Image (cartoon, rainbow, N blue to C red; front, side, top):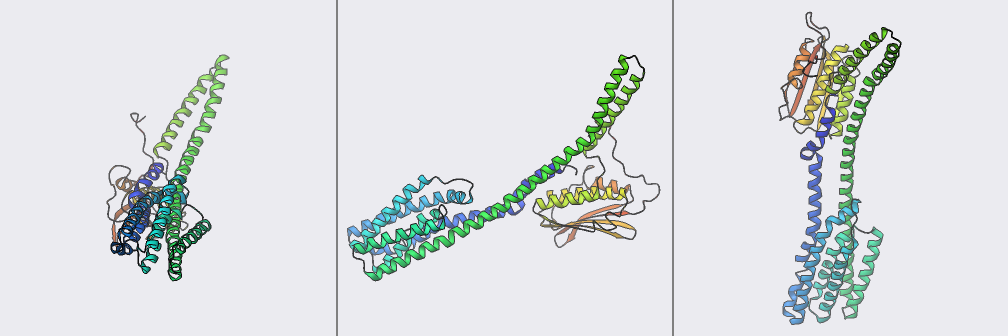
Length: 433
């Protein structure tokens, strides 16, 4: 297909601005911001409200309460720093350096000691203890739950809960408050588990799907390169073999003084010039387009770009039943229309439809990305297609079709009017050589 490699190369840039990648990046950012904000929400609510009671419980309670709030704020900052790295670790894209957990783990131990000390000096009200316990492990567990298996996370949470409840019981906290503290720990551990890991799993699945679409586009590029390589091999392989054989024959004839050597070299010259022309045809895309191939190629490229594509009537009389000249002309239309669908607007779906009406083949390429005007200049745009179709007595129309649709319609009569030349590849001037 004409300039297919260039078109697919532009797909990734186009998708960054107009396809699911931008939306996915926004969802990813929203998820990370939410997880970063969660520790701060707990800090200024469950973590701050109970500490207000320390203001009238003496200097020791005030100092312990202030220290608890300050250390908790530092823990929230460290949690925010580790969220992105823990996401990358969960997705398997980058390992998390476990040394970054040393300071958060130490701060969690300090917070636990401060909470037990507050309970020991009576610095908080009875109902405030459950709220502080609810806030205590949030900042540490949000990144930690993404770094270890669920089983390991639950075992470590259970061990922490046992230690905390034992310390609170040791300083004389009543059994009812101990039960409330244990219930708070269960709630917060499960809350972090059910909110963080499913979010990370969803983002991981969506990014994997996006990577798969990128891989599909790269495979399409590789397939086009292989196709181009096969064409070059088909064009040059046989001709070069013939040139080599005739050159050897000419050398032998010349050594024997046979005049037929000149004829052989003339034939070599003719084959070389023909090969040069064929190579130009391959490189510059001057070979006649094949309609079935162009339809398959357009469908593959559009779907690789995230655009669903439906082809109708390709196997009917308007497709394989049309004369070769008409198929070639319509193949050029499919090629150019698919390029314009990729380069213009923000389409989600494209329909390529082949029908017959009033003794003519009608090709419609319709997409829901209206709003941009396709290029119309030069021989590679719609103007060039109109000239090509006019050679067969056909016509081309392009424009908005209502409801956000953009439609390109090519009509070619099955019987070309008399006096109209058949389409042929453009000749190459000496200057272009």
